[in-house]
Length: 328
Ligand SMILES: [Zn+2]
Image 1: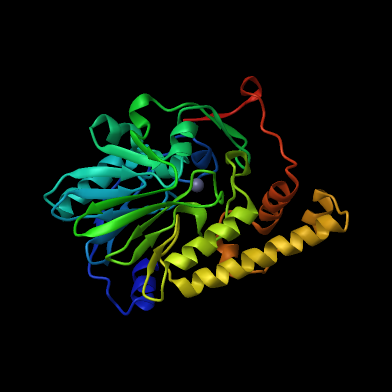
Image 2: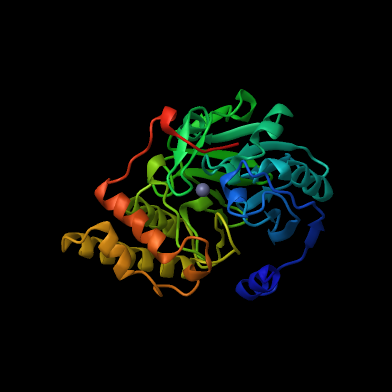
């Protein structure tokens, strides 16, 4: 994995720790990601990002940020259920103080999968109001054509917020900012002000076409606006932890924002010309827009679909009784 090199390259070799927590790869075919051959379990890669902030990675799960210090540990997102023990073991390796808070950047299962386990163990789960609402009701994933059932009570956030909230922990202020409806309608960015580290959740990706969950209220316009909010928070020293993929910086975020604007304009122009979705997909206007985006699991035509759905509102979420596939 290029992670260590990438981090050292972007931030002058400040990487000081890399620990591997061994794990068994297993697949649960009930999950849509596993059904596509994507793993739910694996080795946890642990790296110091800056000061007391660490990054816990296991692709394709969401990136976990960890704050440690005298007041206790705080994590941002918690991957899939099979990763819960490895996350706890990694925290144990790094600090003697207990895990206190688990923040969810949004409701998706690759960021909240360990909630039930961690909630049952008494760790306090915190998220935007809409995250609790979506975790507590039937959801439908358009891209995977899969339904998700309500989570058990112990998996639900016990503290929710609507606009902004702050933690005062481990010697710094940690801000939670509700973003414009980008990836979903409950997206939170977490900004560690002292360390100057920003966890964006899936409202920002740089190594793949972004996924906008339009059935969960995400929009292309919101994604562009959210990126502008993130750009306002960040400066040239900020280390940016995206929802997935290696850490990056504000310069790359600026590039991505500009390409999102171009992507939207290209698809909107073809809609305005009167082309239908099939014709726009055939034209494949977003291919080659960004070389790094081509590496992701969402392909250029799938992103055309997403922008089309977002711009036209032309998509259908089936009634619960008509949902054929369910994920855990
Ligand atoms: Zn997501």
